[in-house]
Image 1 (cartoon, rainbow, N blue to C red):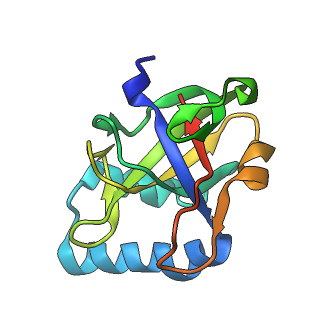
Image 2: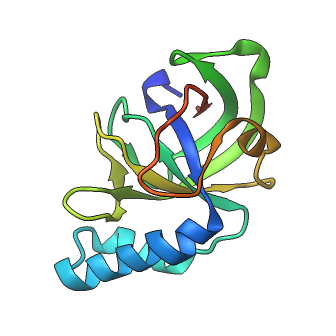
Amino acid sequence: MAEQNRLILWGWFSSEIVKNKLIPDMEKNIMQYGETFPIACEIFQKNKYAVNSLYFHHSYAECDIPIGQKYTKIALMENYEIITNSIQTCHSEVICFFTCNPKMQPSEYAMRGHHESSLIQFGHGIPQIIYNELLEITKLPFQPTKKQICLY
């Protein structure tokens, strides 16, 4: 996989934020503004509570990344460089991306150069490295820390 398809995660949203803020706001935005990406909205509705999945906020996308993007590795990062001794096998797939412009809604891809959010499902359960090393987002807005995790 090309390095440019990597997804750099800044934090994962707590279940309270997901249930009480993210999902209600997205559903309200879809009703109020219409579906910008109908296929992504359908996928979101079917999978918003998918098993072994988390909602993430991530760094800017280095290229457009489509929904359905699969990854096989996870690693800690420092200054956008992978820490090689932290690399682990991790089968994951992006169920949906969420664009923030103008209002948060499901999107068919992460737009190059944008900080967005995503719903990612892990094939063998959520890796402990995420809970141990990545920021849990419990309030909005949030400030990213220097800790990052990369899917590639």
